[in-house]
Image (cartoon, rainbow, N blue to C red; front, top):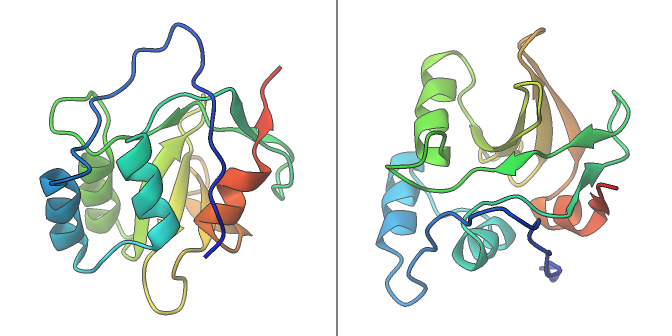
Amino acid sequence: MNTVRKLNRSRGFSQFELLDKDNPVELLNFEKQVGQKLPDGFRLFLLEYNGGVFNESVFLDSPDGPVVVATFLPISHTAPESINVSFDYFQENGFPGFIPFGSDPGGNYFLLGFTESNLDNVYYWSHETMHATKIIDSFDDFINVLAPDD
């Protein structure tokens, strides 16, 4: 497994509630909801940050050109938008096999594959076309290539 680099939180952003690293009940409950253990890099990211807004938020090499990750979604039952609620929406609306983990300013999502054929691949989902395009092979690689949003 690659090492996921440390990210810098954007100033003025109040962090989502962190998960308990010693007893990550919320994370374990989400893995039960998904039906399997999450890929290691994604799991570590959630335990370290549980979502947020970071200075490193531009993915430069997408087929649609540079895209911004406005927010990484948290596992939460109180946040206005969360991984667990968005996961249910995607499962119920014809996108099984994907975990939404982030969104851009225009309402599009970044998805993580969790089936045998797409495990740990990252996709960019357009709400206009309702289509997901693979943009990189792993969550670790995705995090590690994010550029600062100047």
